[in-house]
Amino acid sequence: MPTLHGGRPAVNIKCYKGIFDAPFPLDLGKESDDGGKTWDEVKVDPAYTPQWIEDNIMIDELMEYQSIVADDVLGILVEGSKELFQEAGYDVEIDSAGHSGGWLEVHGLDEIENWSEDLVEVWKTFESRCEEAVENFPAALATEIYYNVFEGRKAEKAEKEEKIEAIWDEVESFLYAGDESTDSFSLIDQLKRDCPLLVAQVEVIKK
Image (cartoon, rainbow, N blue to C red; front, side, top):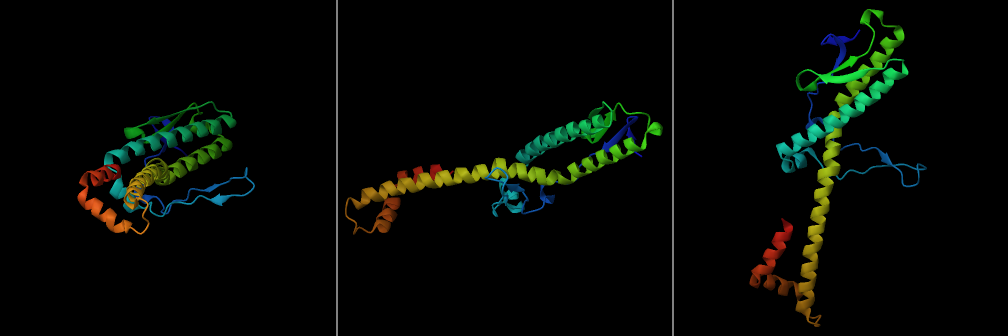
């Protein structure tokens, strides 16, 4: 039978696990490029590890993403659960309650002693969905940061490297001055020593 919270049937959805409890490497499922005819595993960059998160994500940023993901997971859970009860003939409202919203209270059900066997089974399904959402939260958080932070920073790094490469390509072209016998590596090294402003420009791009 369900637990009561605030006099209403409720499920405890407190999550005591964080991003470092997610399974690494992440399982991002499968994707199809041909309309579903074939499916391939989504490849995760092996550089995305708990150590990368610890080294690159500040606590405030992590807390912000944690809040965003929690709201998303809760919204999906509530809407799906309302549909579950509606299919059983109950028009319910589901609200978060308690400290930090750690309980989901369901409004609109019969008194518990009057529950039918069908409603008991629906409630068990609801509880299972809540448990699954809580269990999968660390992976959902890690996935959110992978797509929105890790891949974004990786793209920025690649763009910076391209800009730096382009600068040195221009320098190399200038130093050659049509003479392909010139030792470009030694000239570039000399330029780095003698032209600190150019080196400073590259360093700005790196940041």
